[in-house]
Image (tube, rainbow over all chains, first blue to last red; front, side):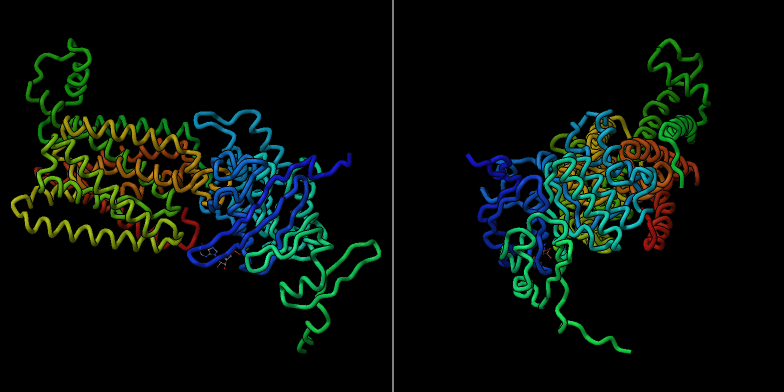
Length: 274
Length: 341
Ligand SMILES: Nc1ncnc2c1ncn2[C@@H]1O[C@H](COP(=O)(O)OP(=O)(O)O)[C@@H](O)[C@H]1O
Ligand SMILES: [Mg+2]
C-alpha cells in the first residue's frame, strides 16, 4: 500500500464550505481547504480579500457556522477558548503594549490555557517560557518592559508568547510587515525552524510574494473572499495568477541554484525623476 | 521607574491602615483619649478589659458612631479603588473610573428612585437601597459598555461617560424637583457623605465588598492579559467578552454597595489605581490588594479631614476627594499623549 502523507497526518485545520459575512457584506465565500500538519502554509491575497477574517474564524475570535471549521477532527464550535488556545496560537497583526509588563511576564501569559484558575505557574511553565525565549533569541530582553523594545524585538516576543502556548498551529498575520529586511528574514527563518524542530504547523498571512516563494510549502491565494488558487508556491505564484489577482504583470526569474524570484515586469517601472 | 516590591508595599499599607484607624477613631467633638478608645475596643473582645471610669456615652460614641463610620470609609474606599482598577484594565484606559463614567450616578439614581417609589422600604431600607443601587449601577455599566466598550479610543469612552453623567444627573434633578420634601437629605447624601454610617449599612457593605473583591481577584490573569490588549488576551484563550462582562459586573456591584451607604464619592477609583500602578507595576495579583488597602486609607483620611477641618460642621467627604481628584484628572488628561499607563 502506498504511504500517503495525508493519511499519516490528518489535517490540523479543515475548512468546509466556510463563509462569513459582516452584516450583508459577504467577506468569505465558500472556502474549502485542508491545512496539513508540519508544513508552512502561506495565505496570500490583496488587501481586503479576507485573510485576517479567515484567521479569526480559525481561532473562533469570530464564530463560524456549524461544521465549517475543524481543528484536528473537532468542530471548533464545540471547543472552549482555552482548548483552542492550546491548539492554535496567534501572532496578531498588531500588538498593543499599553501597560508596562516585562517581556518575561508577557511570554508567561502564553501559559494561560494550560493553567487552572488557582494553579500557580510551576517549574514546567518556567521551563517552557525559558525555552521560548531562547528559541526567539529574546532571552536577554526578559526584564525589559514591552514598550521599551523595538518593533522587531516585540514581534519575536509575541512569537515567544505564542510558542509558550505549545500549540499545534501557529497562526501569524503579516508578521513581517513592520520589520526591516534583516528582521523579516529572522522571523521567517525562526518560523521554519519551529516547523522542523517542533513539528508545528504554520499558517501565515504574507504580502511579500518572494517571502512566500522562499519559505512556504503550500500557498492559498485569496481574492474577493474566495480561494482562487491552492498548491505549492511554484504552482500558485505564476505570472498569470499574480496578474489576475493583483492586477500587475511580473516576471519570474530563476537563479542558478534553482530558486525563483518574482519581480515586477519592465513596464511597471517609471524612470526616476532626476 | 523601578517598582517597589509587593511585600514592602503591603507592609507599609497595613501600617498606614492601622495608623489611620487609630488616629481617626480619636477625632471628633467628644474628647476620648487613645487609651480609653483602645480599652473600649478591646473590651468588645475581652469584656474584662473595660477600664474603670469610662463613660457609657463614650462607649456609645466609639462603638455606634465612630467605628461604623471608619469601617464604612475603609470598605467604601477599598471597593471604589478595586473597582476603578478593574474598569481601567477592562477599558484599557487610565481615566476610566466608576464615577467619571457615570456608574456611581446610575447607582445613586437607583437609590433615589428606590426611596421615592417606596421600593426600598419593602424589604429593609438598607437592602432595598442596595438592590436599587445595584440595578442603577448595572444599567449604567451596560449602557457605557455598549456605547463605548468596543472602541479603543480614550475620547469615545470619556464622552460616553460625560453624556451618561449629564443624563443621569438631570433625571436626578427632575426627581428631586418633584419630591422637594426629600431634598436636603438626598442632596447631602448624593454629594458623598459617611455621616449616616451605621452597623446595619455595614452588614450589607462588608460582605458585598469582600465578595466582590475576592471575585475580581479570581480574574487577575485575565485582567493582566486584557491590559496588554484584546488580541493578546484572545490569543491565549481568554473569552474576552464574557470575562469583561463578569468583572465589570463585580466592579459595578462593589461600587454600588458603596454608593448605597455613602452616595457618590468621586475620583477614588481614578487616583488610587493610577498611583498604586506607578508604585508597584501593572500586575493585578498585587495591584488589586494594594489598591484596596490604599483606597481604604485614602477615604478614611479624607473623612477624617471632612469631620475635623471645620468643626462643628462637617464637609461631605465627596467634596474632599473631588478637591484632590479633579486636578489629578486634569493632570492625567494633559499627559495622555505620553505613556500614561
Ligand atoms: N469588524 C468588521 N466589520 C465590518 N467589516 C469588516 C470588519 N473587519 C473587516 N471587515 C471587512 O472585511 C473585508 C476583509 O477584511 P480582512 O479580512 O481584514 O482583509 P485582509 O486581511 O485580507 O486585508 C474588508 O473589506 C474589511 O473592510
Ligand atoms: Mg489583514
